[in-house]
Length: 91
Image 1 (tube, rainbow, N blue to C red):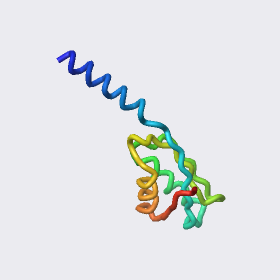
Image 2: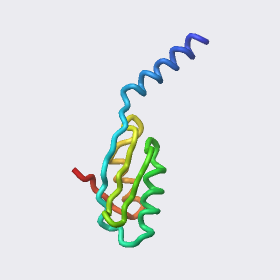
Image 3: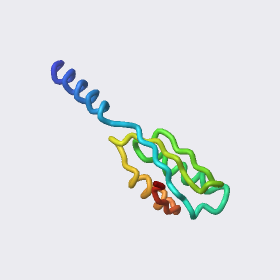
């Protein structure tokens, strides 16, 4: 049993080596009030793998740092859209 636990722990550790933190900027043109960023940030930070989300009402964008082994940029777009703020990925 101990060998299985050690093997499993090493496997998990090796998987995290492949995961890289990613940063994506989302365009949020439908934010129209100073309270909108609060809702957007809540939606983004609920996505598993998101480590930070900085949302700017003035720029109408969100800069999100996430673990690409746990989520994708597309999932972040879906989260903001489901919260009522459709977004697109800025290139």
